[in-house]
Length: 202
Ligand SMILES: [Zn+2]
Ligand SMILES: [Zn+2]
Image 1 (spheres, rainbow, N blue to C red):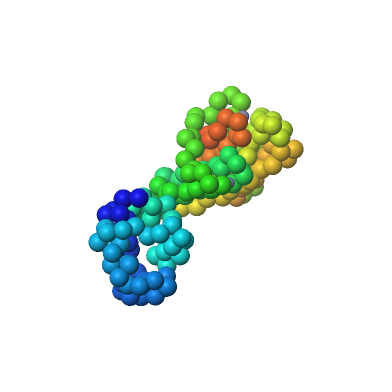
Image 2: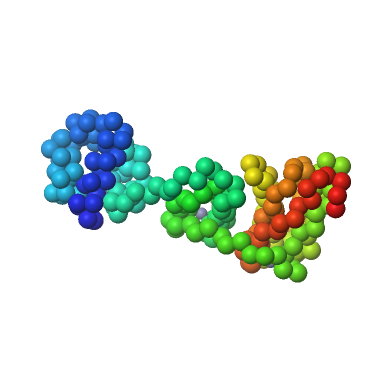
């Protein structure tokens, strides 16, 4: 741990949370001298305190250890920058509308890179009444299947989680425009443009 960096971060976070050194110390059942020592870079918090320090300052323990903030630039939650993450350990699927620091099962998650659809991974979209009826030729075996299909417009996302042995089809209400994202458990994420814009067109 770099005590200078960690101390500076603690001071910054404490001030943002409107806490005095005394209030922070009391919350951790330690003396305010200790807090002041950390903030001057004259010693790092003991590992036994990291968990409570992380809870009081509302930051991940990893940030306290590195002394670095994990904030990202504002992006206004633009759905064009949507990212999908998949945890290879537990299969958890996560999605964000901008850069994020996510972890699952003790691993840092990196966003999946969307690829152009290929012959084996593409969706056929038909308009049926007010719905998009989406089908795909991909197999749905436990060893190789489509894990989800998401329909993303500029301000909405519809998400269908799929399971092995399920039919190769999804139905979404037809919104205007947007993109379809889908992922295969073996071949990763795909993005397909060209959702019919007006219900009734195919
Ligand atoms: Zn996980
Ligand atoms: Zn595949």
